[in-house]
Image (tube, rainbow, N blue to C red; front, top):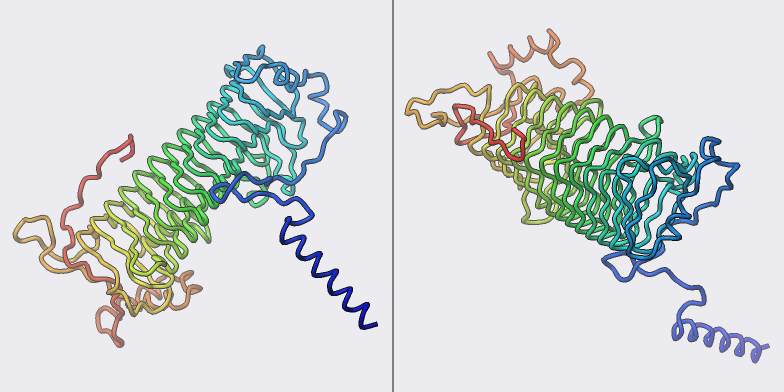
Length: 453
């Protein structure tokens, strides 16, 4: 028996040595982009027979036949009309639709998969994906690099444009709408996953779920329009992205940074981010971001910050922004300091700045040269700045800062009376929310950049 046990141990050791020396017996996927060669990131997508697709595509010519006949590197200009999907492109091609070519997958699967690099898709109408989140049914999957996706019209799709491990591509002037579903079960209008150094410019993402960038670095989102969605842009583990000149209206959240470092948000207009989670710009454990010259108006919360900046000795810079007619201009859920608020405009907000609970460490932040429409002072020497600092103190409003449910009663007659009495004859010491040593006395004119005021 002892001999058999010894032989079994030797056999097991030999097997382990073979695995270590020669690798696993099962082939393994490579690492994601930026961490090695390309990995196979897509789940196997089912094949649908023609009779399983919507009858509207039964008589259409398959677009795949045109792709298969086109030589690699050639320009394909299909005759105008409607074609049946799905389509898989495995070679460099330029496909020019001229705004007169429709590819319809008949409400099953993904419409077009672009596996090749150095390709161009322009002027196509893509429609009719499936509605499976398990297989990420979309109108366009982009898996290659250095591609140009321009002037596409995308509708009736679960996901719009889905980039996975796709770098140095350009997405220009595309129009994307999701399927008519409840907000939470729509797909993302645009998704970047492990995709770096891409340009997303002049696109319209309307009535989708989110525009997301996960593990995606150094991308530029410029002059896009986002409306009636959940997150206009949601960054997660995505560093050094640029968001400039965009217009985000009527979404739940404008731009959200989660576990990110770096990045610039400038010259954007973000308005009407309302609802229970409504927020113009949000930070969660993020660091090193510059927020400059943005218009953040009519939002439940202008900027919401939670444990940000997160990295030691890092900052978040907020300068030259306008916070107007929001429920709360800036909300710090957990105060760690390192936020520099310089030369901003605060006007018409129900509450200018608030802390989620007792502030305690407000002096860790920097407030300088901001304009406050509730500043109570003068500018006797005419230098454009108030003669004394602007202090924001919390009186009765400390009640709903400590107890968020009490916000329901904010501005009610009872709360207004209590606040008046507290300010008239305080029966407790108010909390200091902020102190701006050099407040502006005259509201500065906003600079116009990229057509945005």
